Image (cartoon, rainbow, N blue to C red):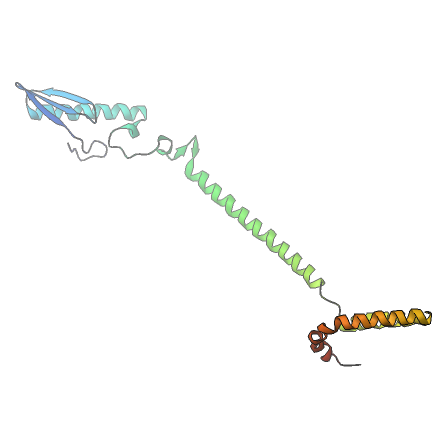
Length: 183
């Protein structure tokens, strides 16, 4: 049946004729009417359907009617659990966006702090390295002056051993040393 309006627009009706009476039955709406002719029975079932719809609307249960779009009853009015769903979602999105911006700014400032610390960790200048090396050599020379000849010979032997052990690395270190100019 089609009355051209929303919920009651179409539903299936079974027609049965018993003697002079017409019975119209809607399994979907649980309606059964009896009429003396088909038109009268049709008007009766439409009237019954309208009464059912009005009762459901008064009770706020229109969503339970057959053929009504399936929605959860909490979201029919846009309110779920007593809250306005749209407003709640909007607020959640705004709070999430603010938190994302906050996290971004904090991580950006931490990145800048780390970059400043890395810049401070650069290697010393060649002049400073030269001063340190010169100081170490002079200190070693002063310490060598007070040694006995036997002890000096042991130190020389140790230095020769160290030089022999470092010989394989000489070819790798040579380009660095050759770029340095004497003062």
